[in-house]
Amino acid sequence: MGPDRSCVLLPAGLDQWALRAATHGIEAIGDALPSPWGDRVEIVLRELGGFIWIQITALILLIRVALSLIATAWRYRGRRDA
View 1 (tube, helix red, strand yellow):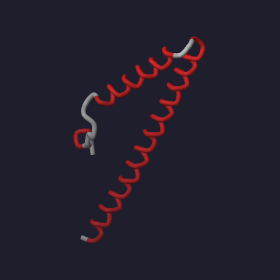
View 2 (spheres, rainbow, N blue to C red; view 1 turned 90 degrees about the vertical axis):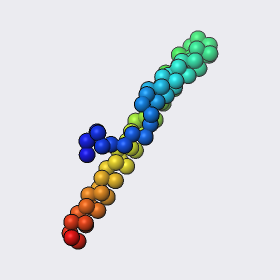
View 3 (cartoon, one colour; view 1 turned 30 degrees about the horizontal axis):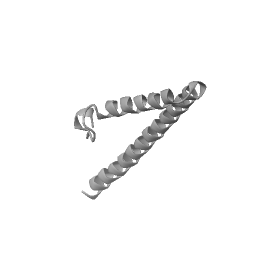
View 4 (cartoon, rainbow, N blue to C red; view 1 turned 180 degrees about the vertical axis):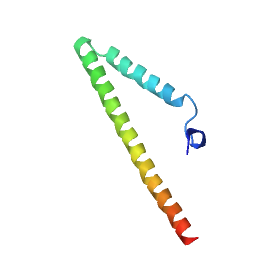
């Protein structure tokens, strides 16, 4: 199944907007804090955000693999019965 048959769940550009909004929010928090702490908090929040995105991506890949295995088994069972 190619990209032309895949299902898109989000409107175009929504993910880009969400990433930019999160980045601006992190920068605003860092700018609101005093000098050494603002930079440190901004770095921690950026790293934490990246870590969360990696986990979300891994979960999506795991779900896709599981559903692909179920679909393959379903197709195989259908061919065997026919």
